[in-house]
Amino acid sequence: MRPPPASTLELTPRHRGVASIVGEALGRTGGLLRLAPCWVPRSFLQPGRRLKLHPDDLYAFGLERGGIDERWFASTTEAANENRTPDEGLSWCVVGGEKFTLRQAVEECGADLVGERIWARYRRWPVYAKFFDNMGPIPHHMHQDDAQAALVGQEGKPEAYYFPPQHNPVGNNFPHTFMGLAPGTTKAQVRHCLERWRHGDNGILDLAQAHRLKVGSGWIMEPRVLHAPGSLCTYEPQWGSDVFAMYQSLVEGRAVPWSLLVKDMPPDRHQDLDYIVDQLDWEKNVDPEFKRHRYLEPVVAAEGSGWVDRWVIYGTFDGFQRFTAKELTLSPGASCTIADSGAYGLTCVQGGGTINGEPLSSPVMIRFHELTHDEWFCSEAGARRGVEFRNTSEVEPLVCLRYFGPETQPDAPPVGAHLVT
Image (cartoon, rainbow, N blue to C red; front, side, top):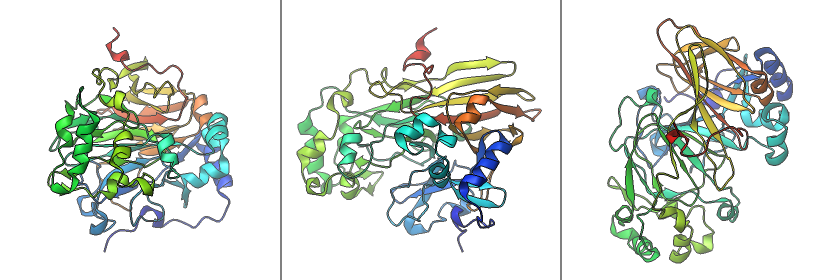
C-alpha cells in the first residue's frame, strides 16, 4: 500500500483561522514558516534518484502517474499534470500540529508574508523553485511567454538552473543540455521536423547544439527558447506557471505525444505548423553567442568569518528581474545573520544547525509521507530584519539555497559577472 500524499499527513485539523496561526508562527520564529516536502511525478520521464526520496517511494502516486522526479519548494503553483491530486505542486505549511497550504497562507496574510510590493502587483507568491532530477535528457521544448500563455488562460514561464554539488554525486546518463538552435537554422527546417512527428525521431536535435553541464554552475532560460535539460539534478527557480511545448517526438526510445507539443496553445492552432514554429523567439534561439548571454557561475554577494553568501541565479529577462537565488555556506561552528530585501523560499542541502533558533538540517533519506527540517519560507519583514544561521556541526559545512521573487534584489549582478576579476 502506497504512503499517503503530503496533504494527508497525520496532523491535528486546523481549528483557527490561517492568518491567526501564521501571525503567531512568524512572531515566534522571527518570520519563518516550516514547509513539508512537495513531491511531483512526471509520467513521461525516469527519476534520477538524487532527491533523497526513499527508493520504495519513487512511484508513490501510482505507476500510471510516473515516477517522482521533482521536489517543489515554497510553491503556490499547481502542477500541470493529467490526473493530478488536488494539491499537487502546492507546498504545505506545518505549524505545531496544524497544516495548511502556503497558498492559503499567502491569500489570507498577503503583504505580511510576501511584502507590500509583490502583494500589490501579483496578489500571490508568483514564483517557485524545484529540484528537477532525471536519469536522462528530456525533450527539446520551450515555455511560452506571457502573451502566448494568456491565450489559454495561463502565464509565461522564464526559468533558471543551478547544479548543486550536494545533489550531483553522479551525472547520470546525459549530463549535457541541448539549447536553442544552431546559427543558420531556418524555420523551414523546424517545420519539416514537425511534419515528421509520427515517423519516429523527428530530428529536431540535428538542428541544435549541446553544452556540457558543469556542477556548481548554472544558466538562465528565457521563454520561447528551446532547451532539452540534461541529467544533472537541477535547482530551478522559475515563474509560477507550468506551461510548455515539447518539440521533440522521441527521447531515448520513448515517444512524446503531439498533445505535449500543443497543450498550451489555442485549440484551433493544434495542427497549424507555421503557428507552432512562430511560437519560437527566432533571434534568441539562433543567437551566435548563446552561452555568453545565459551562462552563470557563482558570484560572492557577502562574506564574513567562516561564512560566504554567493549569487547562483542572477540576471534579467528582457530587462526585468523575475527571480534570483543565493547559496549560503557556513563552516563548522560558524554563525551569521543575513538580511535580505525580500521574502524567500529556503532549502538546506548539506549539514545541520539552526535558523533563528529553529531546527535546520539536510536529511539523508526521506519517506514520501515524512516531514523534514530542511525547508522554510521567510517573510519579507523577517528577511529585512535579518535571519540568524548557525552551523552546529564540528565537521561539515551548512549549505542552504534560497530564492527570491521579482525585482527584489537590485544589487544582483548581471549575466557575465563571474568573468569580472
